[in-house]
Image 1 (cartoon, one colour):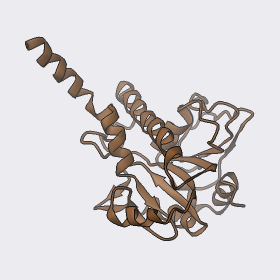
Image 2 (image 1 turned 45 degrees about the vertical axis):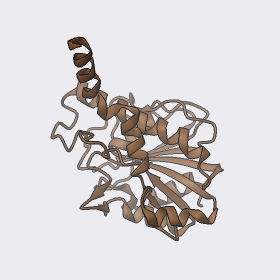
Image 3 (image 1 turned 30 degrees about the vertical axis):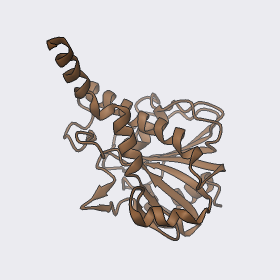
Length: 245
């Protein structure tokens, strides 16, 4: 009995990165369209999805500070979400902190100093991506002819390190993540990707060379913000990558 108790304790210690965590992240995703917005499991979103309308989905993976702030989606993401919704897209942003203990490196004060911690965290974020990409295709609201992935900051690291994507993912956008010798660029052909890192990013100052594979593009604006959506040329490139312009 003691053996089983110990085993249960070990398994519970990994609970933040189990399928339960990924399901929680998915169910509490922030969803925004032109007509409705809110958590995926909220009554208003469930009601909005009864129309049977299909959307071009942008699966968005947030940074280490979290998706929600005081019960509302963070103001850091809202301008980009508003723009995509205005253009008829659906933003579907899994809440990577929906499970107790799922905190990012910045929230823990570690900021990448403990590589073991950040590697475990990235594996959890990668599982969030896997879960979303395995469930969104079967949702009645998803238009699979055009489907995109976007990650910001810690979420950007997750989407570019994730590796191979299903064929229905048309492009991957990663913003606000600096490269360390190009090691983070793992997105595999044939999925195209766009990586944007501002020269003056206060969160990630070190950038010793981003390597874009033949299917990818790297853009480094002369901009001093972590949220590259505030840079006009960055917005233009993102919109082009998402086949908006």
